[in-house]
Structure formats: C-alpha cells, structure tokens
Image 1 (cartoon, rainbow, N blue to C red):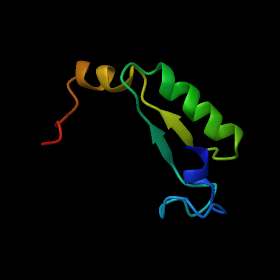
Image 2: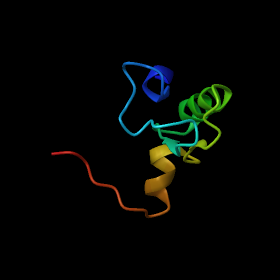
Image 3: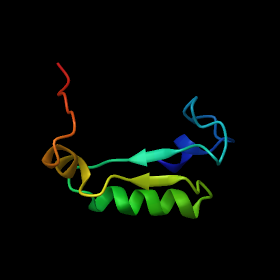
Image 4: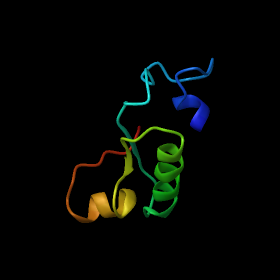
Length: 69
C-alpha cells in the first residue's frame, strides 16, 4: 500500500502528490486501519489517520453508508 502513496513511485495514486496529502484509512472494525495509518505516518505521510471503530463504528453512530451495487 505504501507505494501507492509515495510521490516518487511509478505506481502511486494520482492524488498522492506529496507527503502532505490527507489520507483516511478505513477497515471494518478499526484495528487494521490504525496500523496502516501508523505505517503511513512512519513513511512521512504525517496527515494519515483512520476512523475510530472502522466502518462498523461509522455506521453505529448513524453516519451515511451505501453499499456498492
């Protein structure tokens, strides 16, 4: 995953224009995304974060969610 956010990588996402890009990582329960956000921060993406409680927490507090068709 980190290569997708590395501005120098040939495989980077177009949105990964520098190390100041905001990245919000999300997983089901929030554990894996916390580890991923920490790994991205250790690579210099200081604005990387995750959603507390993951997608389940998002839905539990009534935030909008739509499943792909």
